[in-house]
Image (cartoon, rainbow, N blue to C red; front, side, top):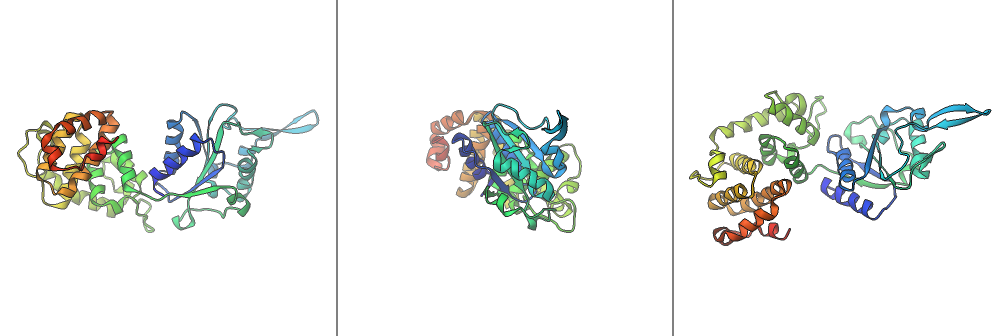
Length: 332
């Protein structure tokens, strides 16, 4: 499933108070833990993220302490005691078998030693697959059989929505719109390779003038810098957003992706978004209008102005007659 489909599914688990343990499978860097954190934030839940590969069995079970001639296990402070939240066991199958055995009791019985998981907490886990070149151990069959399993794959549309919200650099986003297959591409020969996580790192590097190959790898970086050459010939963005541009829509595909992404990223108000959409509608091929409408919807949603944007579109007779690509906006 896509990241957005996974989030929607996890939302439904929370709303229905389903306490089934969940195991999320997927390649490194595609945002598994970020999705779980977003679900916790959406539902105002506490979020405890445990990287099991970094723990020892006693870290999870607790330490034995003598008391009146017997031992009691004192659980660690990071395990939840009350309230509602998500206990997230990340990198579960990277943990050695001894620790997986302790985690198994926590997952199956919702307790370990003398510790009991509070009723209001969900127990979810995540891990990489063997084909991802991760140093993983086989999951015991009894443990695997108690999970609900979901496998998540990289998806550019989901990343684009996330990128608008997070302020990913427009040139990074424009490039990935042009070359979406580079969103996630593992490289067996290099330590740096392209993933949603590494592109977000690359965005911060690029914003400060640093080279991005150290984050996404040399091949992806080389394509990115070749793509940047189209920015030298793009129409000026500011007059388009102001509604005063007389420039024509580019004819070269990479420039088309660059200009539409730049417009969607820089439109800060509903008025600017409509001006950008009007300019694209005036000279772009029809199939670009739906793409532009969706990008502007996401941007206006992140600014809390999607209603104002849809209203302005409805009032524009020229746009209503030119295209119905924005119709989905009006149904929000």
